Each structure stands twice: as C-alpha cells, then as structure tokens.
Amino acid sequence: MGKRPQGKRKKENVGRRDHRKEQWDRPGKTNRRTGELKKNDMKPKNIDEQEIPYKVREIMRSQEKMKKQLNKQKRKTEKPKRKSTSMAKDLHGDIPVPKFKRRKRESERAYIERMEEETQHVMFMTKNQLARCPELETDKEEQTSGVKSKSEKKKESDKKRLAKFIKKRTERKMMKLEKELFTDTVRFGEVAMQPPTLTAKPRKSQTNHQPGQRQLLLKSLIQQSECSSGQKVEGTQYSKLPTMSMARQRMLLEERERIIKAYRTLKKQKQQILSQNKDSMEKLKNPK
Image 1 (cartoon, one colour):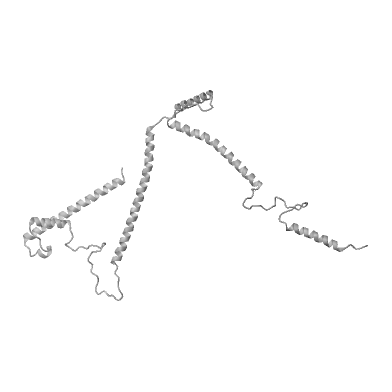
Image 2 (tube, one colour; image 1 turned 180 degrees about the horizontal axis):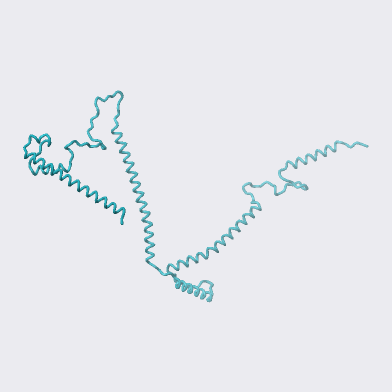
C-alpha cells in the first residue's frame, strides 16, 4: 500500500487550529452555524444611554399599578369621613342655608330631586341639632385661659431661677474680690515686728459685755427711781452700808425689795405667756 502525502494533513490541521483561535479571540458567544455574535451579548453602543432590561420594566409597571390601586382605596375611604365631619359641624354650629342653582347639562327632574334631597337634609339636621349651652362655651374659654396662665407661671418660675442664679454668681464674684483684697503679698525676707491691729470687729464675734454695761430692764427701773428721788446710790451695798446712816440704809433696802418684786412680776408674766402659747399649740394639734 502506498503512503499518503503528509504535507496536506499538516496544512488542514493548521487551518483548523487558526479557525478555533479566531473563535476564542472574539468577545461574547457566537452561533455554531454562522459564527456571528449574538445580539443579547453585544456590547452597548453608548454606555450612558443603555436600555432598561425587560424584567425591570415589568417590575416598575407592577409597582405603578399597585400605587394606583392604593390611591383609589384611600379616596373611597376618605369620602365618608368628610361627610361625618360636615355632619358634626352642622350639629354643633349653624346649619348652612342651601343655595339652589341649576348645573350645566342637568335635567329638570334631576334638579328637582337634588333640591328635595338638600331640603330633607336641612330638615333632618334642624330636628336633631344639639341644644346650645353658652355657659359651657365660657367654661371652655376659661380653661384655655388657664392653660395660658400655666405657661405664664412657668415663665415666671424660669425668671426667678435665672435671678437666683445671677445673684449667686455675683455673690461668688464679690467673695473672690474680698479674698483678693485681704490677701497680703509677703515678699521674701519680710518679717512682722508686731501683731496686726484690728480696727473693726469680725462678723461672727461674740460680744461679752462687762458687768454694768448690759442694758437690762431692771437698770431702766433703777434709773427712773433715781431720777424721781433726785439722789444717786454710790458704791455697792456691802462696802458702804456700815458707814451710812440708818435712814440711808433703810432707803436702800426698800429700793432693793421694790426691784426684786418688779423682777418677780416680770418673770411671772413671761411664764404666763409661755403657758398660754403651749395650750394653744396643743389645742391646734389635738382638736376635739
């Protein structure tokens, strides 16, 4: 048997391989018969102006239909509400007087029927109208004014708080200024040779009066008695009694007894006032 020429086969194989390479190099899918690219997988001509896919368009249409249906349902439900509000207004307020006017392309029969319906409606409203109470209306107005007064009270309380805050702030500033005034800047090496001299009394200092300087009630009584007698009692009882005459001693003892009696009467009066106050407080606490 004769051998076939090998050159032809090589050429055929080379041609087939080149054809396959061309198919793989092309972007997108191709038809097996024609070898052309499919239209679905073609690149868009203008990237900015691309067509919306078919399924997305269907979804958008269905959404628009749903919106329209919902709007229709809302309109149907809103219509009776408007009637109810108008009915309530007519019951509480003045009933509007109907004005009849024939519409365009309205027959005489329809016009008459509409007039009858409106008149019947007005008659029904007049029969079923609620009784008016002007006193209640005034009460409502007072309530509204009371609400306004509450807001005004709140404003006043806010103003008071603000005034207190400003007062406290000013007091703090004054305290700081006082501290700064009374603080002495001591230099290095400065020495005090004597204690400071106080010219004014401190605020929280306790006043310890010396004997004979207190302003007592008995002192005023003694001064009145001295003025009436026209004589001054000099010295104490124990130091001057033996050197005094008998008449002088008797006068001093009488004056002493009078002062003691006056002191005792004052003490009794204070005790009576305190007992009366206690009794009144007990009566208030435990009323029978």
